[in-house]
Structures are given as structure tokens and as C-alpha cells.
Image (cartoon, rainbow, N blue to C red):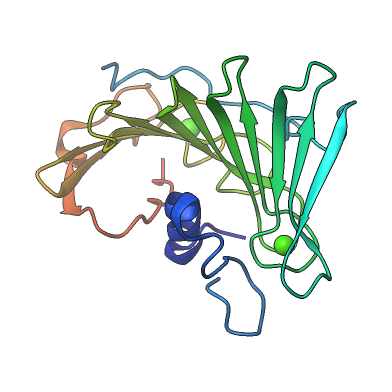
Amino acid sequence: MPMTPKRLFCFAVYPTIVLVVGCGRKADGAAEGKAHESRALAQGPSLHEPCLERRGRIERSEHAAGEFPELQRVFELSGREACRAIDLNRDGRPEMFEYFDEHGELRRREMTAGDSARVEAVDFFANGKRIRREYDTRGVGQIDTRDYYNVASGERVRRERDADGDGKVDQWSVWHDGKVTTTVDRNGDGMPEPDSAVTTDSKADDFVAASKK
Ligand SMILES: [Ca+2]
Ligand SMILES: [Ca+2]
């Protein structure tokens, strides 16, 4: 399932809204640098890092109705919280996983896709600040898109994307002044064609389709 603006919104602002509105597909009305680098983005097959599968003590919180756990926190024997699984839409299954480093700082956040357990986006953090987001926009268990963030401002600054899924970057986007400029590699030489540059409003987080070669 493609990443929609609504799902992206849920993912982006979850920490402040999760316990207020929830996110997901529930039908009850709940809110659901090196710019020209062409290295491979592939990973997988599973992008999920074990959380509930880990050895440790699991602490559950129950929501008001008492039917499903909203939050399952996994603690190591040392007492440190290793990760947590969050059921955003209260359908009994977690849509989000968060992982913490030895200092208790958030280091990784996964978001699953719709009705499946497949991970479709992963945020990476350093000292609690997001530095990168990776997407599996094709739903095949491989990262095809990476966004990079300005740590100080929290704003996204650039994107590398393998739109045709051959493992090589073929699109480069740069955010600037509320706009985003994207260039593409049409001829497969690993470099963007200068006349391919397109600048659009950056409000919508649409993924640019692959160019024909
Ligand atoms: Ca759920
Ligand atoms: Ca490619």
C-alpha cells in the first residue's frame, strides 16, 4: 500500500497525538550533502527489528475500554526499556515500534503498513533527534527512499530515491524555501539530467514515480 499523506501525518506527529486521536485504518472515525550519490539502498527482506520477540519483561498498559493494550514496553533484565510497541488505532495490533539506546534516548522508530505487519517507514535518531527516514514505498521489504533531516531545525533537507527498484538511486530532491526541487536520472548513468529539474510545492509528500529509460 502506498504511503499516503494521512499516514505520513500520523507517523510524523505521533508523539504528541497518539493518545488523543490515534492513527490508522480503523473504521470508527479515529484519525487514522551527497546529493548525487548512487549507492544501493536495498535492505531486507524484513525491515523489522525484534521488539516483542526479545527476551525481557513486557509491561502492558490498557486503554479505557480494557480490551486491547495500547502500549507494550519491553524491559531488559537490567531494567532498561529496550523498546515499545504501540497500538495506535486500538485494533489490538501495534502499528508502531520505538527503540531506545543505553541512555534511554529514542534511536529508531518503525511504522507498519495498514493491515499488515510489514514495516513501510523507519526513522533514525541521534541523541534523540531525527536524522533520517527510510521508506519501503513499493512494499517489497526493501528500502527505496531515504530522507535526511537538519538536526537543529528538524526540517527535511533532501531525499534520495530508487524509484524503479533496481537498487540504484535515480531521483534526488532538495527542499528549499518551502519548495522541493527534484532531478532524475533518465538514462541510467547514475547522474541526474540537468534538464529534468522540477520544482514544486513541498507541502504534499508525494513520491515521484520512476522515469522511463
Ligand atoms: Ca493497531
Ligand atoms: Ca534506480
